Image (cartoon, rainbow, N blue to C red; front, side):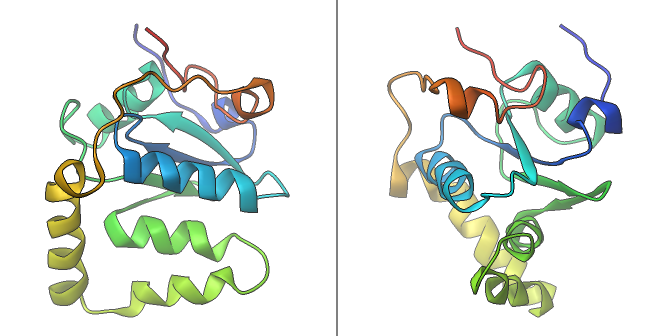
Length: 148
């Protein structure tokens, strides 16, 4: 199913696209759900129609997801910059973690890429389909969740 992404699709909210099969990525999603009390973010799995569309639009692989995507105010972030952009939007002390965006690319990119390449070996891969409850389901963008 093809879908067109537009700001209206996100209902004026920021968006996080994450690998729904990656345990680390799913834990990041749960971390964000718990701390994003003002509901600034909507979510989509990389495997969903919306996730697939966005990865294709950015020229990224649509089967081997080596980055989360974070859209904030219409700008897209990848790798460690995506993490930093997400942290910047959280309340309390969490924005201090966004300082990682100031690390030189020669340090942060190899670090991020090493984790991304080995995330299934280190953290595992979800063997069961994730089924969100009604409240979590409401946090997903249209066409942002695919259950099979």
